[in-house]
Image (cartoon, rainbow, N blue to C red; front, side, top):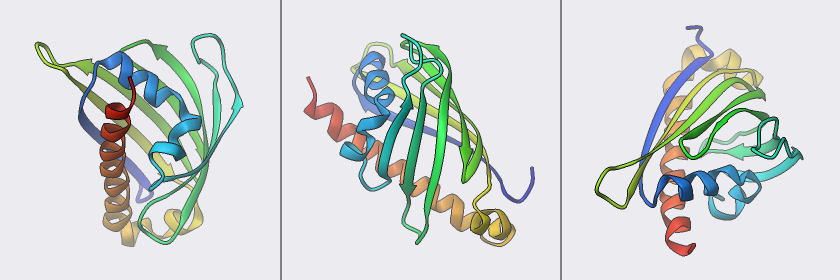
Length: 158
């Protein structure tokens, strides 16, 4: 793995079934509404097919560090309600896979995000060898905020 390559696996446990979690996360255009600590602007560029395959989304995101990221993703695979995959390009390039699994005999779902990227934004690309732990901490912060925000969103929606 190069110094600007990252692999993150995030697991969230939220009170909802996998269908509800899937449906919430698939609506990328609403991310700034319920996850504003990270998503500044999201625009659907292409809707994709009836299942969402081929959907292209443009994103402007941030963390707690003083920089923002501009990137896009395309949905490459859909397995409703168990997950979907995407490919990303822009300030980082790589793949992401969301999986959703109901916890047996409970009201909870485990949402797992496997994110494999290479940082291409010059600041990240050329300073990863030195600041990788800080850039990684920024990602982990963003995902913790996502889990907190998703819990609130799910509690508010029917």
